[in-house]
Length: 326
Image (cartoon, rainbow, N blue to C red; front, side):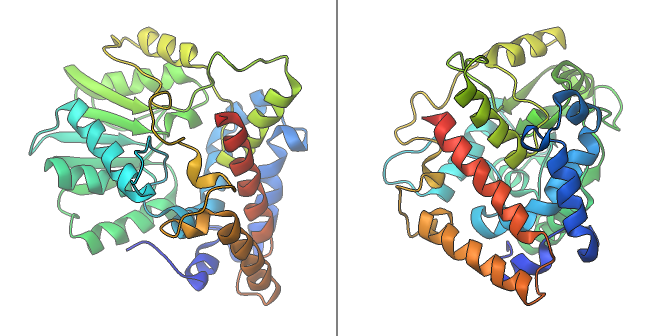
């Protein structure tokens, strides 16, 4: 079961970083980004350090507010956030045609919410690839709790250097994860290499649409907010992602902007004008309570110094995602 309480949030803050070093890690992370004078090339050159610091700092917040699956989903009216997330994961498994006993790779698996759901849904065996030690440790605990440790496991590795032989997997997927890669072509090439010939890779990818204007200062501000709040070296356009797939050797069988036909906006859970009891912690009131709770926990020493700074850049990301989605 995912960590749910205030003390769970406080104890998990910083991940594998020593609690006395959390503030320093926050400062180093922030300096990678535009808001603090950081450059895109520096983020790409140091993506391993940047992304690892990010997930050490934010995973506890993600579990507290979002659950075990750290991604968005198109959503029907009357459907809860968690229902839409499960359906989104099932849809991916169906698109891949997963079957019992197949070997599947989840690239950038987080704490394993999607891999557990997909393994249970399809009866496939799923390996999660992740370069963050804290997330893997949480994932293993959650696998045991869910009773899927025999069919689901984790490997600590960089998805730019996947530590498996060629033609190892029957299917590969990535859910809002390869956006962290400094080089999309290089990342997709590694995925292509470990996939058996003729088999499929499916991905939900964060992309900038054609509406993005690089010369528009407000657009650049929104992009920078999303980058710092989500640990991204850059945000590629849809066209760049599709071209990268082709350069890596893939044939693109189907692609779609899933936000277009969604009955409810994908960013709705973060929209402060929206209220939901089922995802209360993501609402304006819920986030206000969390902000003050983190402030109190840090003040009394139950949460490490720097915790409020983490909450602040996550709030910045939420605002950027809503503005960008609109």
